[in-house]
Image (cartoon, rainbow, N blue to C red):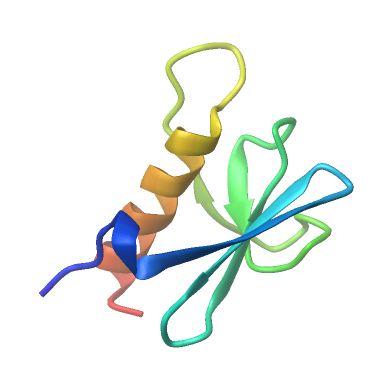
Length: 75
């Protein structure tokens, strides 16, 4: 069984950084200026690159990247 969007809990945004958690407690962060999702709020520990359509990634693209990462890594 794979992960889907409903398995992510959006924790909100602080200083432009958006945060999601999985039901298991793993946290993922994204800022609109980042081309990746991260496992720390500073964005320095990149987890996965966001597959974006435009010049900047969208929140939806960040969520899809988290799901793809979770399904690939089996976290």
